[in-house]
Image (tube, rainbow, N blue to C red; front, top):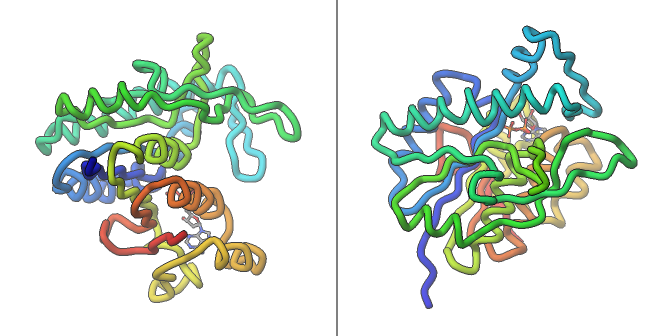
Length: 256
Ligand code: ADP
């Protein structure tokens, strides 16, 4: 059986937060032919809204600690404000967007990450993606827009990294679809030197990755992003790219 083509695009927090870059990405996304899914990050807007509500943001190693109060804020902001803004913009561009968290139709079930060695609070590690439910929605003409939230199926929402959501969904659907997974971030791709826009690394393998982390070339959010990218390419996803809003076709190609 030939697999149908499916584009899964993950758009990062920094892109979502910038009016111009978000609109540019959504326009490119609306122009993609065929079946597609958009997954989005959260960005710093949750920190701002938390502060205005008197909820303190705590970070460990640049990652958010999600206590019970912060879980309420990220649920409001990611599933509400951010997700619905993206859905409304896509509808205006003629895309039949349907905003979802992992709890909706039980699309993504996760388990709360153990409190050891670091307690990140209500953070979920993905366990199961309901590919049948997602396929049905896609076949019905919907374009799912996934917020960075999952649930434990015991009544709790869990904050979940958007890159991991995109990669997990891509892996789960790869039996059925020929998938291109595109991570859109605020750099042209994986760079040799972040201050030099001409230093794009056009292709990267897992063997290239470790020494580049070791010598500090690749750091911060790019480390887990690449890990999610390698997981996808090793699990049946046909093409994985890390790029910017400027060029959805360009950027860094991940090879197995
Ligand atoms: P997003 O929120 O867009 O998904 P992240 O902030 O998690 O993305 O990760 C992207 C960030 O990783 C870039 O903005 C950049 O600051 C950082 N980074 C670190 N090393 C590199 C590198 N070698 N190439 C590109 N980005 C890098």
